Image 1 (cartoon, rainbow, N blue to C red):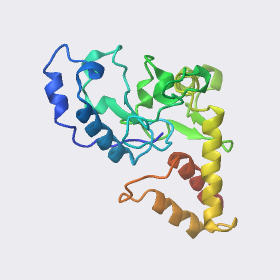
Image 2 (cartoon, one colour; image 1 turned 60 degrees about the vertical axis):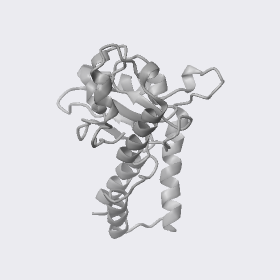
Image 3 (cartoon, helix red, strand yellow; image 1 turned 120 degrees about the vertical axis):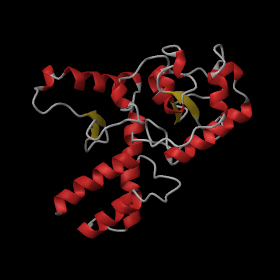
Image 4 (cartoon, rainbow, N blue to C red; image 1 turned 30 degrees about the horizontal axis):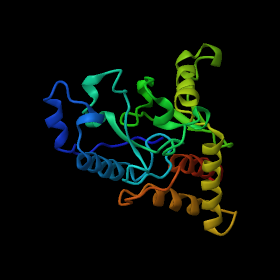
Length: 228
């Protein structure tokens, strides 16, 4: 999960905000939803807003997610800052979805998430990773874990409402890191190697980001510190 910088909203959203009874699922035209998908992919570097798996601007390859669900706050239904591009999250066309294998928006459903996990306003040191590829909430260092209720709430949302530590996703992060190492051609990275790779991954000109980029950057930063 990375912070997302929102761009200019599609013009059609303003039209629907003027219609009190407008509904995203029922009223928004197919071409308008396609415009939203394309803009979201551009903003997010074609990565899911939650797990950072690959998304593409087609109905069968991504979802337009409402961070605050439509049933929780209808006033945000046509707010661009509330709209995100998400992967299908284990959902398969024509098949019954097994909830234990779902993740991201598909798993969230109508649950409200902690606002600190909103990718549009994600603050540094809200989440991190560990060497096993798991995503973790960052707590208050002044509090013992059993008393850090805010950290516990974040971790619950990550694990239960979004299922971001699903075995498949954890494996995908590790596989992405291993592929990056193999592509380098050797195991003994130098400090300049690491710094160059960090610059490559964070280059603003990249139209498509690398899958599971946050985990790769976390691993690289840890590597950088060990070499400094």
